[in-house]
Each structure stands twice: as structure tokens, then as C-alpha cells.
Image 1 (cartoon, rainbow, N blue to C red):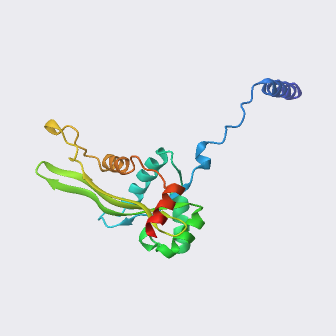
Image 2: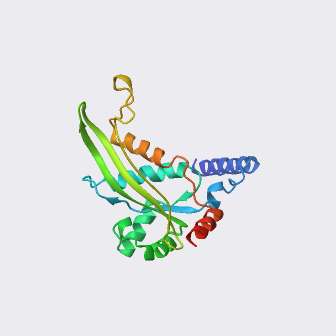
Image 3: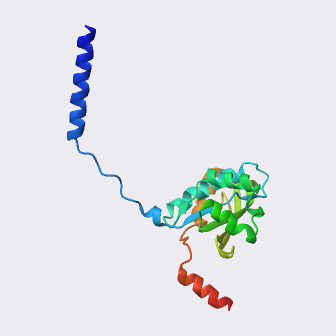
Length: 203
């Protein structure tokens, strides 16, 4: 029985391989648009809040929303953390303008997004405690560390409250995502023309 079993298994294997050869094999997926987009690295956020997990949580949210803009590739947070550990830098506050090119080169990024968490927690209102998130962001040119874009925003869970409390946000994660989408709405990277205009203005 054992030889017959081995023969049967070999026959089934050959049949399977033959069927596989005759099956349609899809071509490799085309190179996506993202492969030609500039790389942007969100640096570890400076955390001025009382929550130790604020930087990790907000970084994940902003990297996700930034990727949805389809205007850039985002460097994986793990790669950023690795480079910061190797360079012994704690957060974005430790990246001086002089060190921007070095950090960007290690991350293979054309732009660095640095920021400071102003608030991440809750505030007390007449109706009770509501979540509150505040952050500043600035986009740094990897070549010279100049700031090409900046924004600051602080929102609370009742900023969008409507009639009878409808629209109030009670989740800190949900409010963080709303903040990220608000700040990055219409976000785009400067073009060569923008850089020329800025340089002309500096002259």
C-alpha cells in the first residue's frame, strides 16, 4: 500500500503542477504612483503634555492621515525611531537646522515634519470633561532645514458641538484624527517654482 500511496501522491502533485502551468498568472502589479513621490518623515514629536504616550499615539494618527493625502510617501515610524536612537536624539526638538540634512539623509527623505504636542488629555467644562488636543507642525526642507510650511491647532471635544450636544467628541483618539485631518486638509509639498519664489523674496 505504501508504494501505491506514494505513486498516487506523485500523480496528484504532477496534475496540480500541470494545472498551475495552464492557469493564468497575473503580471506583477505596476509600480504605484507612491514610488515617485517625495519621502516625508514625521519626526518624534516633542511632548509638552502630561501623557507619556501622546507622541506615539499622535504620530501614528498623523502618519496615517499624511499617507492618505497621496502627495508623498511616509517614512515608517520604526525607521525614524531607529535613526533617532542611533543618533542619540530624543525628539524633533533635538534636530537643529544644522542637523536636518544629516537626519534626512539617514532617513532617505526629502522633507522632515517636526512638531510639538501642546496638549493631549482633557479639559473641564460646564458639561463635564472633554478631550483636548493641541499641536504645532512645521515642514523642513531636507537640504537646508528651512521651514517651508507650518501650522498650529488646538481643539476640544465640544468645538463642533451642535444642538443638544450632538457632534461632541468624547474620544481622545477620534479627536486626534479630526485634528490631523483638519491640519492636513489641502496639504501639499512646495514645488520648484515655490522654492524659486521664496528664494527671490529672500533676496
